[in-house]
Length: 471
Image (cartoon, rainbow, N blue to C red; front, side, top):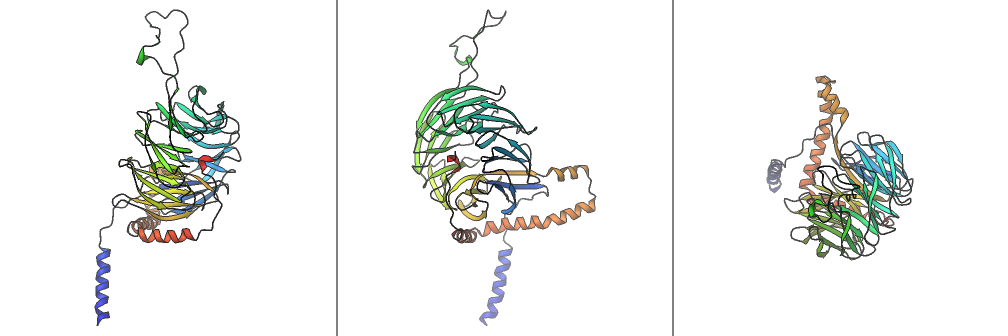
């Protein structure tokens, strides 16, 4: 009798659960693609992860010792710096294959792009110069001599300057990208590492791991040359001391004391604050950019190496390299929120385009941890872990539309029957993708426990230093 009553009751519960309102799901067009590219320094390849189902889409062979990677915001290309073979691989994101390789000088590590996506800059640590690359012609325009052992080059948000941190002589080279020449060299602090520039390109903040400081450098206009001979009729010669009308040269504004071994700094999107990862003091320091002051320091976990800020500036995520975790920090409240266990040696991080997921490169366990961010319930939960290659270092995310499908649709090449067949063939994929997102939304705790078991089964590997410390 009890069993007979239980069956209808179970069926009713199942019907009730199935009738629950599902969250709104994205309706991706057939031409939409969303990938993450992870450089694997020890296996000389790049793992491509499909972010619509968190599965490996392809593994691409590149040069030796790939480290830095960056996606072009204006075209469907991804650029990989191969440190050991001294070259740059260009990946066509639509085909996920290498379409060109550009030779560089010795020991390049990272790449940055101008905002228009037409040029790339790469600091060559072993040859003390900066390569400027024309990405349309896929060729090096010039190599500019900078300071000793340049580790990193950053392009200013306005696209006018490239800033190079020279670890060998403790300087910052300011390169004018229009003139293709060094505009100034500013002495800063010991062993400069990461560079962050304000959105208006007026100041740069540079971490110095050797002196436990952050250097603040003003980025002024090129000083006006003294006029020769009498001024032209009706013109006025610039007069020193006229205040606002006189251009200001690049100069050191302040040296800020932070924690031990500051490796990385990231700015809020609006530029109000900078967050410094102090590797050997297990803390982050908050810098107020308007006043050039350190406002506070908080312990976040063992060996913080890199951080990333959400688009709304509400949360800061910090990868703890020695703690195998990611700390979540509330920016406004200035206090930790939670900590999420990931793989071994977490380092580089990137958001998916919708920022619902955080991708964490685990350099020690050879995988990418995927953290689900559900801000509606203030939950940050490990969802899954995607295996990649050996010694993963950096990650870049690229979302785009396939140009081939868009051109086909625009020209109307396929007839209605062919289009119907194409939609029918693609719709199951979309259904599987949407199902995955529903499953993730409703079964996060179960997924987290499964991922924990999978992580425990990973064979141990030798930890490599954080990518920011390479070279």
